[in-house]
Image 1: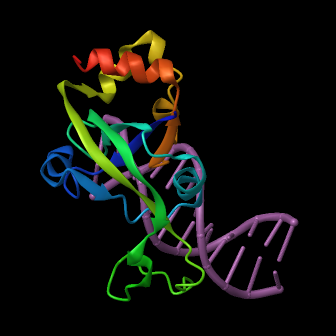
Image 2: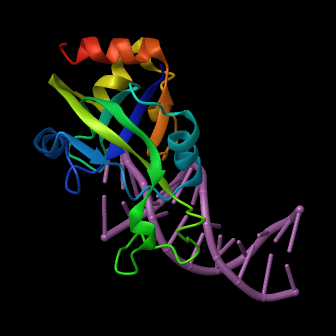
Length: 152
DNA sequence: GCCAACGTTGGC
DNA sequence: GCCAACGTTGGC
């Protein structure tokens, strides 16, 4: 099983929303590297850290799990969607998304600043300069450290 | 295939 | 709102 960090802007889709919905298709990813992780590497049961980006403060809000393997992202076919892609056809979809299921909200929100202060988290990729990838792989040890910091 | 221009992300 | 870092586009 693999470990992941997935970013979402809480103004757009927060962990509280996921808690209400229980599951959601992670639509709207339009970056090939992130898509490839979802298509090729993510599997049902993989663990996910839910990261709030563009937030005050930014940081990790809780845990989720992959509940369905990748499927074509339907927004790419919808001309009215911001995520419409004219290159995509039903036969040859371009973008894929996985289904994510809520697990737990952390007792303690882990701010980016807090992550930075942890010596044993300093090589987490979310901390690397210019790391904008919205779906990124995570080392198991980092996942476990974060989980503890979160109070679980 | 190079690379300048442009768009986006996301912390601050 | 600024801007650094990075991705994408398109002319050549």
